[in-house]
Image 1 (spheres, rainbow, N blue to C red):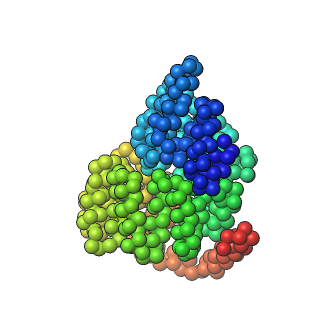
Image 2 (tube, rainbow, N blue to C red):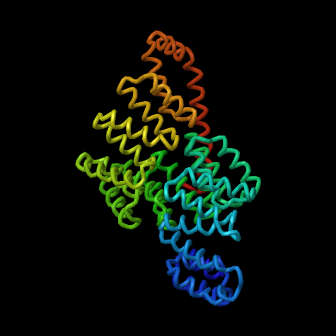
Length: 427
């Protein structure tokens, strides 16, 4: 087993497969060996055949063939069938409230872009096992994206109390720093996580995102490519790389990558939206972007990224009424900070100021750190009362020196983390 894991880590697939098969010949119920084979693209049917004899002779093992089938779907990237199969397993009395299954289900919902269900399953898993570490890096990332930074901080502290020798606590703390716009610190924490586990996809994505936001795009690209190598079925790895290409105006490379993802992972709402995102960057392919987004929303009307991109397209065309209808429909069954904020922007464009203010307020209640919602609200308040706005500007001028002091403090903190970054050899 150890030899198989070492071969796998070294990228030597054939001897790794041979070693895992030898484990299964002697121990047909070695689940880690089964997962190892599936992760190396061995067919689920072949793996199942190696366990068939023991399934037939040992009682209460009828779940195992379904379990192998579920994880075979996981490793070929068929998220919807994997979710359905694991859900059917979870209903069996023997595997109800199984923490491993709940963690896998949470991860699958995350990969499928269903963040709400992903968070629910992660919460269920950690309630059953308060010492759970596996998958908590993804959970922390999802909480940070929702603006629940206090929850992220508490999660990070709890994980550090369990163990600081795993990548997950460092990634969770890094997500807190990243979404607090402290990119140097996020970079350091991501690098520390990679030191502890060089195969941590979430750590590579964190470090790559921090490098990209610090303007070090070429270094970020290296990290996103490594993440893709480790997790070729995870769309967020490709999204990070494509964002780097777009940030460096390499639209052609971004288009090639988005088309490859579309062909490799299939035409689902996520891949359609990713391809449309790149098409929106080129004036020539605007119509293609519109068609792709319509297909994505036909498949999944509640997919937030597709709704956001379609709203962006309607905003460019100044079709505000259509945009308002789209956003209201998307918000009927869910509440999302970005959707409420964009609806606020559209309502301002059609002079519905009071309702726009309500939407900005809802957005800020969901994510108090959402700067764009705050700016939209402040802009409306200034337009409503120009005299007050002038007085506010005078007060801001008087307090300017204090503000500069804060900025100096943030620079010194960035320098401090940059020094630590150098100490860990991350330049």
